[in-house]
Image 1: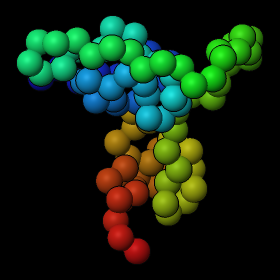
Image 2: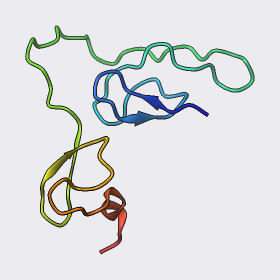
Image 3: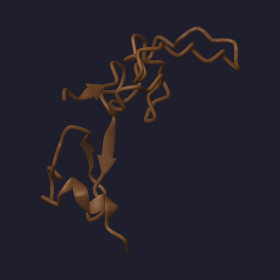
Image 4: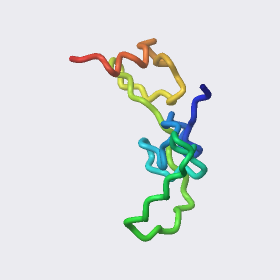
Length: 91
């Protein structure tokens, strides 16, 4: 199965997601739900506002050991080598 990424921030998103859980951008062209029926797009709850001309910072994860912000694609911290999976350890 091919992974799906948000075109705005690059975060992994579910195959049937209508919006990105990381940056909340709408994901056009989502895959049809199982069973072949296409789900209707949810009605917007807010009036869309004009997008800012400034760019958002790229998605990143903070290292739990040294607090260095790493690109979301990085599997280990660029500074101390801590693996990304360490973010999910229970403390």
